[in-house]
Picture (cartoon, rainbow, N blue to C red):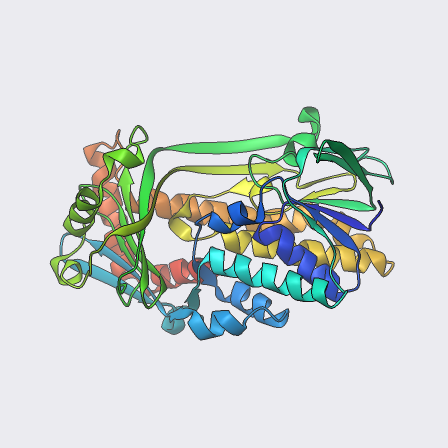
Length: 393
């Protein structure tokens, strides 16, 4: 087989790239090691920067998002017991956010792919591809091989887009001597639940002596909640009663009284880390999304960074096929500027809102002072709001 662009990974980054390339008339094949059902079962973030919202609309993917998503206009931080600092992002920087789950975006992307395929305009998505391997990336003739049904398949292409996540093969296909990796592992995780209950009307972070908490939403009858937990904990350590008790204990009474509790329909524990791989390209291979970087979920940047990567990469590929290789050659440099900005912000917000196991009294007082400064300074609030809603592309 032969195509123009081989896309490794059929998550949001890979399928959004396929969608944009299809609209530009660029041939592509998407190769995914998991099943379609498995990809759709993954529960991920749900706060979209406005740039992500506008990108999805621009490429015809905004109908259900605009119908079912919930617009946020503030970031709210509970601290010192009953105090809630509310930062109006419209007032500070003139931008909003959208609460709309990554699973919903993935469903929208698969639906769009199905519609293209039904109309004879779609490229194949190969699910359950085993032993995926990338070859000859430093040449003008790269290829991808995988196993399926006991056979080895080969796809020749012009370019390879590695959108296969942190554990995928794409990043590992860049020679170790040419790749630098930067990592910070945080000494705690988040236990999160989904609950079919009405959410709080606001996005609320909590800095509490018992640890961090977060109240978010997916839709008017689907809530997403998190609490900080030790890395040694498992889901079995967190029955629903314990989770609700711990969450409510970390919120101001005025907010806790508004929480509607109920059975969890999904529960998981995620460790927190910051990770960046440089460069994000090697020969004819280009990394996008979690294949190149991971951020702690505190700043809600993971999915948004993937969308930004895909936008830059699609623009570079389209320009290259039109005779201008410059944007594609600069892809890694361009993407990494935004990546490091989001990585720094996510690290800072994580430092600001969590209790660290080795935190000294000095550290605690300094954290409290930073929160106090944020509550008093319009400029500090504008800086937080600017980064939270997303820097311009």
